[in-house]
Figure (cartoon, one colour):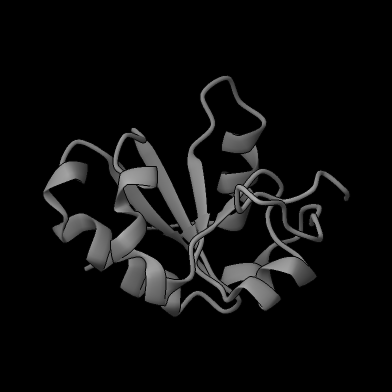
Length: 116
């Protein structure tokens, strides 16, 4: 079973002192249309080759448009031996359930451009 976290809880964590690493596993085009502020884009198909970007995080929340691919991402990340000490959760319902602000665009580091 995969741990899920509500979008409201994610928004609360992002406003806290120690925010999680939010990994959006959408395609680059989907990510550019709108994503959780501060999240990084690592499409699900590229996740294995980018584990080094993610493995050092203590808490990881995966996100996708509807909450399905992010569940797969949690399973994959949980199986990686570099993340055994991390808390890894999927945002329930994906971006469809997110009521918070969205950023648009993407920069070279795979992060949003800061617009809301």
